[in-house]
Image 1 (tube, rainbow, N blue to C red):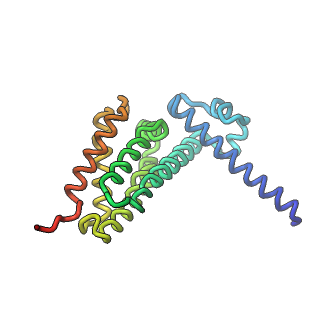
Image 2: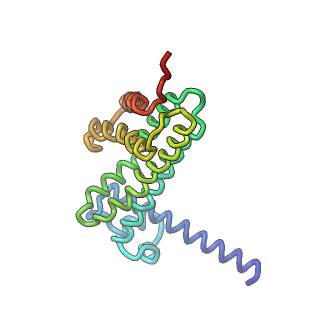
Image 3: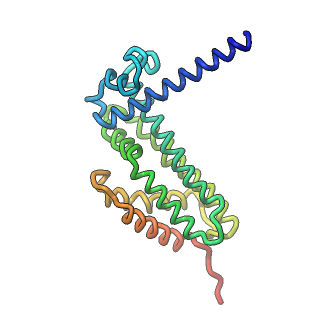
Length: 219
């Protein structure tokens, strides 16, 4: 294979990947707007700016398109959350503000349109696609929990947190955030303001540090 031929092949492969991603992004947008039953492949093709046949060539059918669109959206949400958790790699001298920043930014991601639509579509179609719950959660809350557990383990080893099971600490930290968010947002049907999110973040961190903050030595 000549250098020119190889470059052309790489460009073709890259173009196919980009086109597939454009279709998945468009599909998620349409599914979020219409729901699974009302969405049609023609509208998805128009949203992506491709021919209907191109959608079928890349994703085969509507069911597979739905699965792959939600999986791709879950990957994006996961990347956003893990980027937030990375703030705890270097929290600075005072751990509380760093935890509050992470908590607030995680709530910001969860309140975003993509994460909201992802939850709604997953639960709305649980009877038709029961396996998607595991697929989405493995890429979002489970992966984030693992990332936070790693950060908490390091903080515990350095004495910034008391000795603990980091996986349990991560699970409880997330529960302190998602529980109030779901309750105040009425399962996504009511908007949670920035001020409310800030209050939730502060309360969650306060409770978390009461349980996991380093023990204060007696005077």
